[in-house]
Length: 358
Image (tube, rainbow, N blue to C red; front, top):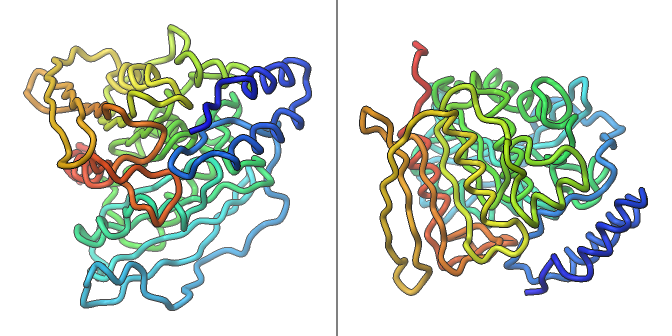
């Protein structure tokens, strides 16, 4: 693996401080494209102000092909092309509809890809569609555009893309609500997860839309508010979030994965994500350890409330880098040696429906 934080990082930081953001973005993109496919880049790039200039067609287009035939489903699953347009711009997305969906209210998982990835690539690498098939869940994959970010990173580091009903959060929420409007979705079981820049975006969505998402999954990501601009984004990735990162007003169920040898996003960021999700609640820690047969060891920390319910799970993958744990080689930036983040996230999500709704 070529480390991100070497001379290339120093040069990108210098260019940023000089206001030469385009050159910094180009440098980071060259680094990204030259790295091993097992190590995704959560790097920030571009000026963060770009938006898609053309409004994509509304609605769904079913290309009529079966998806993930290895699931062995007797019905016909569909992977739909769709788009959403709002005041902040437009974004494409893919929607997986499992073969068992018959119009009854079903869970929805929103999956946010990392830099240099796409919805199709992220679906292939995580295997989330196959897992969702087993539980009759719908899965939406918003797609970042190169017009918004040269490396297709979600702009998690921009102050304007961390606010409710503004910027990219408004587009991701808009996609979520559009799926809820066009399909029967159980509003108690709507979840959001992501990897790297997508993990940071998922943390933002959980912090800004606790009324929409019941739980979040953050893989190799950062907390909402960990950065306010490009330069502080680099610093947070390298050193961890600065002290005082905001906390949620109430505990948000969260499952957090991070490799303890991640050289792209400092593993200390996991603690900030957890502290933010806890929202100041007093939670007891229970630490479990294990090893995937033939794969990675891991530490699984449960954060338990006074009733004995697990509110937050942290999975620290021993020897893991910056890649989706337990993912498939069919997609980029995956580590098949596990533990399986897809299965564990979906299990955690289904255990945490949002209370208080009929």
